Length: 409
Image (cartoon, rainbow, N blue to C red):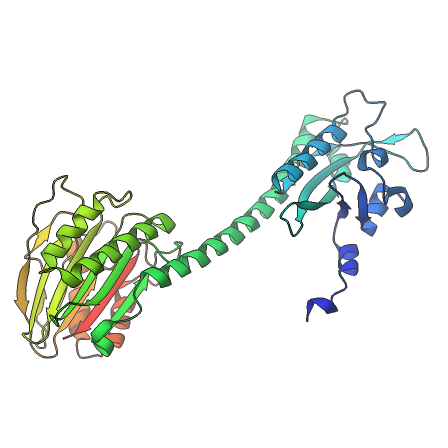
């Protein structure tokens, strides 16, 4: 159904509750039928008239504050361009059939802006729910504290529901930003590896779709092979994602020209020292030389990659482990080590979300990963990656972010 087929005038009249449209000068420009019915006014009594000429304060009540409170709320909406939900208000209304007689009424008002093309408030939506009957139904003397509190709780519950809806909409918008960041920051191309590599990224349950874990695959300059890395930035959300993007990009650039993975991490460590939010970040990088069948690696406080040989033997690449990236104020050269591989071996790099569990020794998680990699080692990389995640991540979702890279050597 297109917008041109919708009768918006009919929609406005059908809106639940009392709804009025006011100009920035607080003049009525439209009201729905329920507004007229509940307030006891005719359309000609309202349209084109100033709000507080139609609904002034009760002159017989020197303590009346309804008009002043409503005016202040509407002014806030005009000044900020944001919706304003008012607390429960007593706002007496003159009986249209008996001039001079005033009815005690209680209302729960919400005021919202309608922005024009210039971004300024063009109209005000004044929506009101009457709660007078609720007050009366509870019994007791008029204005008793118990009745006021109960009606106020009713109002707050409705406002909480509306606030939760606004939070949901804000989270949806933030998630869209996160998805865009993930697409921009995490590499889609697998360089020269093509179908020999599989990558997986899983955010923690309840987190945005981009957080602090990352991976990278890059062709090394001079035909020296391929660099494969993973890293982990502490924290969740867009802040951690931005730090992740900076570190991943820096390591990708350094790896292309560095003599080895240790030198690449040296450069990254110096960079991490000047990046706010990079505290305790970890990373591991491997340089794979397919021509000579070697893997040279270096780790900055990260869980060790696993090399699964064709016969099922699992080798932990843990001979070149150093503290996290920014652990030393004056960086020193990091260690690196080299190992060999044969045909049909498999290399797995991952982040701690795959192997760490609360109240469980990390060695148990490492053994679980090694067992899964061994049993599925003859599968293609994509199938192997899916099998590992299915077996190691909880069915209810991971409590920490997880990145996984599988390379068939």
